[in-house]
Amino acid sequence: MPLKLDNYDGVGVFSIKGDLVTDEVAGLRDSIEDMIERKDVVDFVFDMNGCEFIDSAGLEALAWLQGRCDELFGRLKLVSPDPNVTKILEMTRLAPRFDISHELNTAIKSLR
Image (tube, rainbow, N blue to C red; front, side, top):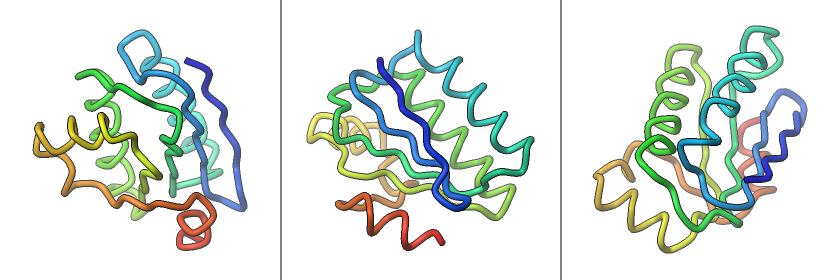
C-alpha cells in the first residue's frame, strides 16, 4: 500500500492508496507515534479516497489512533471512505466513532 504522509501546519495527513491491511499497519503506527513523540501533530486526517478494503488490523489501527487522539485532545477525520470501507465500518459498528468528511481541504481546515 503506498502511503503518503504530509504535515499541514500541525495536521498529519495520510493519503492511502490501496488496502489498509495487516502488512501495512505496523509501519503506519510507527509513523504516527513518531509524529506524536516529536510533538509535530495531535490532529490527523486519513484521506481514504484510494482505499477499497480495510481488514481487522486496519480497523484496530484506526480505533487505536482515535484513542490516542482522545488522550492528546486531538482529533481524527476520515475523508471519502470507499463504499466498501464505509460498509465495513458500519457492520463492525465502528462508524459512529469516526468523524467522516467528504472533502480533504475541508477536513484539514476544520482541524487548524
